[in-house]
Image 1 (cartoon, rainbow, N blue to C red):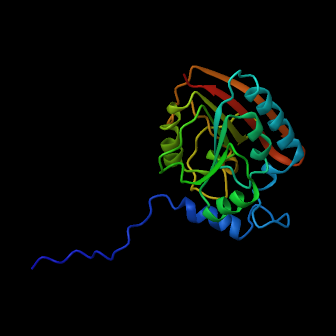
Image 2: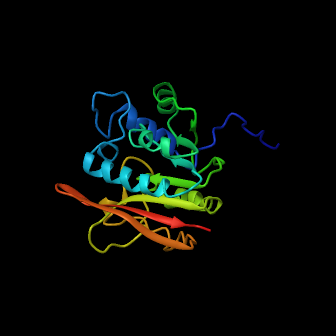
Image 3: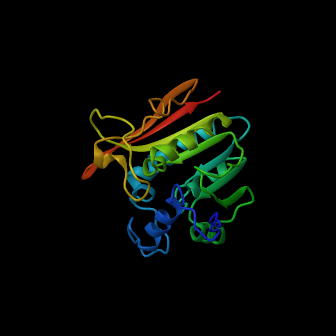
Length: 225
């Protein structure tokens, strides 16, 4: 006799990133700062945040017609809140639902929308420019590849990654979560295998080195089409 299919059997999530990131905030693994949601020093250290806001402001205000910007992995929005005024529309996305609810209550602008999405899995909102600030560094290569496959829909991609200061082997595999490839003396290079992101132009906008802070934080602008 043929066994009946067990319809109650749970299918294992292929990428349990949502659970991992919810845990990061719940357990305050990126620090506390006396806040319910804190995205770590990468979103709050003045020597990291101030120059990033400066170069992004210069970029965004260089267009006669303001851009629609999609901020994927917006975190606690300490950085994004400074850029909204320079855009036609600002779409801020994060995978942690409670964080998005919190941001919706705290930050209100006519041209600002928040969405809870998994950028590796879900359909992404349309726009002119994508900001990925220290986000992909936390994702597995499979998830990064999934995100990269969607970036061809945008004209500009501004990518910020925490990288080793010296030469390194790019794109080593990691498990998605709190950690990054820096621990493996590696970092992301989207133009290299296995991602092979196709772009028209590449320009480094910013490189930040901090004392007592391992590695460098590099912001690169890609013109896709």
